Length: 234
Image (cartoon, rainbow, N blue to C red; front, side, top):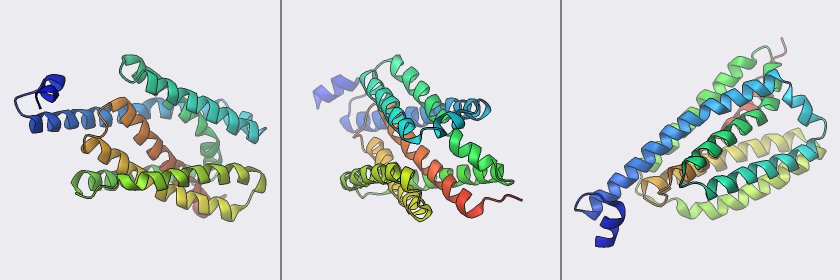
């Protein structure tokens, strides 16, 4: 107990110390998550304005490989520098890159007459999902961490199926994958927020990265479904 108190340097009670640390990490995570939306929106705007979608559409297979290489490179670098200010800088750079990657689906959605409305619906739906999952993670006494292994397998299968569908071009498969992705990453929001709440994650940069990716994937797949079922060419 004394070692824990000395490590954190708070108060005279380990219980109070744990609560203070958890609240600080959760607060910093939410702040950094909110700030990360700024470079994401900026990256998306730059990508749409510069026609970035056309560049990646020409060679979808190569684009996926490059995307995964850059994304995992960023994530590796962020993990290595998570205890310094450079970790925050790299995280924000990564969110700008992810904003660029949104340009393809945003350009497609904006080609609909009701495209801006669909984007707002997707944003509102994602915010609702995040709010609901974060609330459950905060108030629930149940430990949801045991689901993570099964969900990770689901993510791997989703990636493989999504890559395969680049060539298969099966609309029904795309719809199915989007629905499954929304379900998986919604539960991941629950797990990742609860890990911070329960003290399992004490680094807010790592926590923000995990939750950001969850939210990003919910938004992308929700927007894809809205475009398929609600897009209008009128």
